[in-house]
Image (cartoon, rainbow, N blue to C red):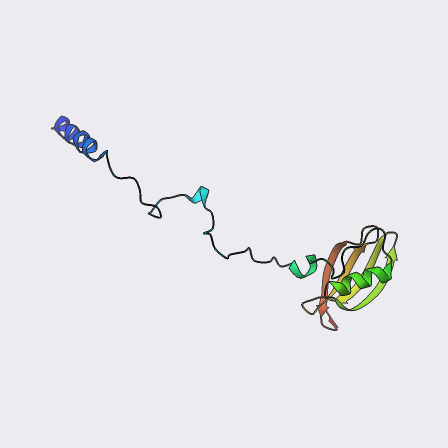
Length: 127
């Protein structure tokens, strides 16, 4: 009896072995090779997109002083900017960010890049 069922299973397998190829878009598990569909889709901007945007008038080329750091932040959308202090090549500023939050910004005086930022309040209020 066991031998008859084995022969039947093998026979059915041989008959069904010539199935048509899978239909494109059919139910296939391709999770490892997933790609987004073609179209007008772009990755969404990250949470730091307003701060990563380049300044409106290009990048600084070389060392920057406090006035140049203020101009660079203003070009990136910061407002109500005040210089707190300068320590070596680092400039510490406070400003209202592009989203309205009050932040402390650390600017590298050698390159003009923002090297750190901390939210300290919202608008003119501090936490």
